[in-house]
Length: 315
Image (cartoon, rainbow, N blue to C red; front, side, top):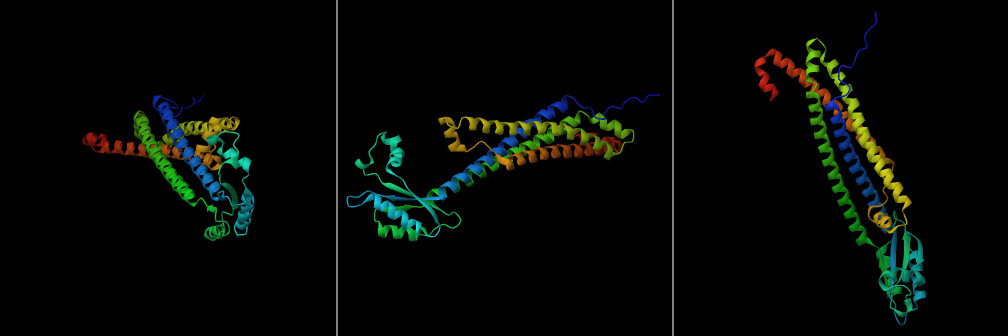
């Protein structure tokens, strides 16, 4: 006697299941894409803030009775005498001319124009110097010198970064909400097409937990396929964008995109977030399937006990 191989209680693939895989894959891709974009903007804004707050600038305006080179050296020494400064660099005439080249053209002779000269001081971000005392001492020793600690730009940049991250987080929450609603309704729609299977199993005496577990395993496979495909596409998108950016780093288009958006890399935490999103979507779909099956069995028992409640249950 040969025992016929048993098939799965729930059909392994049907129209509803395939459609649900596509829906979950699309929502997972959008959620992971938004999560990666928020992570990328946040890291880029933090990099901008760190670069600006790491340096201060001393500007010295030219004067007829001023020895510019001596004033630059004196300003650098005064700044480095304060605790919290690391190094100082005098921007020479060639570098100053290159800074002005986009506006005044090439071949500029700095000595012919009253162009201010700069001294760049690198500071300790964790223990910055006393800017007010440094500014007062520079003004007393070199009246033509002014200190710019970039505090105004840092405050604006921090506000912009926080606003951008807040907007991105809001978009991420909206995408997750849409994903939750889409997955819930798509799962219920797929289960409605298999309601007869639940009824047959329940009528022949199968326990509610057994029926729920069977459907739960079925939809877990579907959700893992869909969320895995969407998450993999999102990870592949960021990886491909990072590779293309690294190979075209010298082009003007890439330089502008890098200056505005930073590197197209979400880092290890970003990929961990993509993996976590995939798991959350799979668990959400699985729990929705379980609760829907249990509610379907409850409705079947309610109708059997009182056939007159059929309309109210369906509504």
